[in-house]
Image (cartoon, rainbow, N blue to C red; front, top):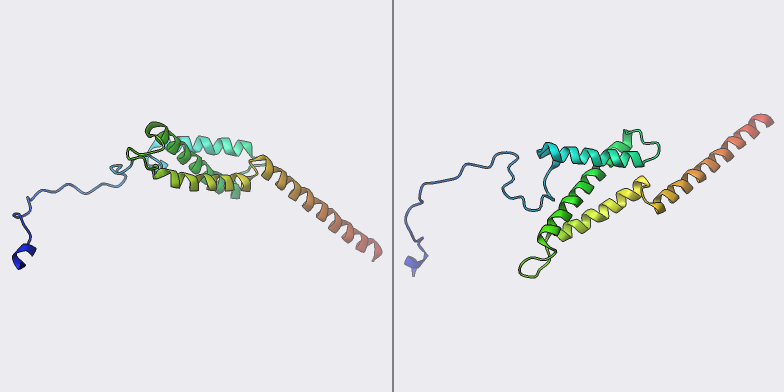
Length: 154
C-alpha cells in the first residue's frame, strides 16, 4: 500500500513560462476590474466623465469635491464596462447560473447612488441640500441679528 502513495510519472519536463510582467491583462475578462491607468484611452474616458460631472455641479471648484468627482467618474466608467460585458455575454453563464459580475455590479451601483446623493446630483438630494442651505442661512441670519441686538443694547 505504501507503493501506491508514491508519485507517478517521471521527472518534470524542464520547461516553464516567463513570469507575468506588471500591467499584464492575462486574467482579465470583463474589464470591470481593469485599472483605467493601464491604457491612455481609458484614462481619457474617466477624465471626460469627471468633466461632465463637474459641469453638472453648481459652484464646483475642485478642492474637496475633486476627489469625490474623480471616484464617481471611475465608478461610472466601471459600470459602463460591466454593461458592455453583460450585453455581449448575457446575464447568465452557459450553465444557467448568473454572471458573477452581477454581484459586484450591484455593489457598484449602490455606491454610485450614494455618491450622486452626496454630490446633490439627483432631484431628491439636490432638494435636500437646498433645504439645508436655506436652513443654515436662516440660522446665520438669526445669529447675526442677535449679535447686532447685543451690540445695540450694550
